[in-house]
Length: 548
Image 1: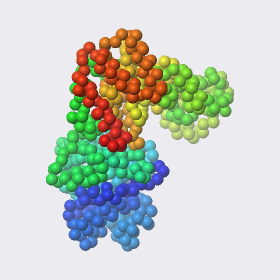
Image 2 (image 1 turned 90 degrees about the vertical axis):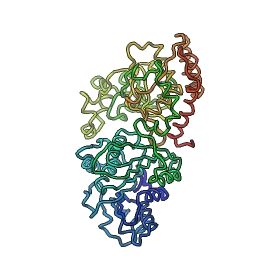
Image 3 (image 1 turned 60 degrees about the vertical axis):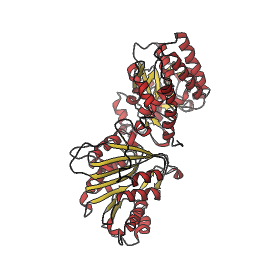
Image 4 (image 1 turned 90 degrees about the horizontal axis):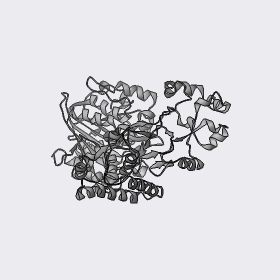
């Protein structure tokens, strides 16, 4: 099948299709289903595998389906010949088919299903996904991506003892629905593993998504308690080696009973981090603060505008509220009013149109009246507000935490009393957390220890983006030294802020690390502390798909 993105269709690299076909097909008498064959890369690899196993009529053993007419007009004739058995190759969406759509159950189901997020699905796709999302013992999350429904639906087409092999995105390891699906698969197969490819196999086609190879062997009708193994492969050749050694049990991955980052990095590399984590002077962010999403407007492009738009619509100043809607508006660890002013001067949209002013301002009233009625009526978020024009809840946070980022998270203290949208998380410190302790928390989050903790707790997505939901951000650990005076903390906070604003982040982290190490009343183990840098480098290299 193809790798679907908004701007194009991308096909499976031949080498990857061939090694997965070689793992899946073990005799020339087996039958195989490719449920979304698209460009027919897998069909060709399956055919080649049957020929290698001595089959003289490999097409008798190959079945498939796809909804794309181009797949049948252009790609399938090249792969199997202009005349093909339409009982074997069905023009249909796989999710619309029941198990009796084909005359047999299959020894293997393999492919590269469409990587379409729930938000990008057509209504028809959502309806079909919902129809196949559960059985008597398991239900997929209603927000799962399309690939997850393909994998789960594939179970219905397997014979007992059969196997599945899929090329999947990183969300299989990082999204909650992906991990729940993996756990369910481990109850239905003798062995389940994910081989995480460090190499970006779609890089020549401008695809940012990571690639995970999911293999499930020994399908069982009777459920049992299994585990999911995870192992990292530097490139496709390493992946081929793992697949070749599968049946001889030459390897065993790490059990996915924790965050995927921990399993992929290995316990040895993280041993220093784990020992530091149990110290009494380590706290989680959730121990000192509540983290929540920002205000949900339902249409940020309507509510959050820049100064040019405000002038064009003649919206008065008293109907505009400064808002921290772009995390990059502050590059330090505190947000000042001048940060927002400078960013607005550069054209950033950091002004909230205040809907409470509609009665006293004709310009504000006209601005909101221009929003199409049909759009307003269909907007679910608007319906949740007493007045759709007034989404601001006025719950001003103490600090801000990024929802997504490429380098590492910063905690930005709110020194100008503004709110934020749901593109940024809001942080509310516990009442007993003093201003000095808040500064220390913001400083400590920049340490190598806390940055590594953030990598472990977060979710890695395409293009190397790291995301944190509020609950995940709350699990990040920080060290709070007790060997510095309040004045020293204030000075350090200002110094770190200046370093960050001058793009000297590495220098800031080094300073934070050195200060923490020398300021703990309970000394840190030097070897453990130094090991954090190598572990963080390894984790980030994997997330950014850089050489290890």
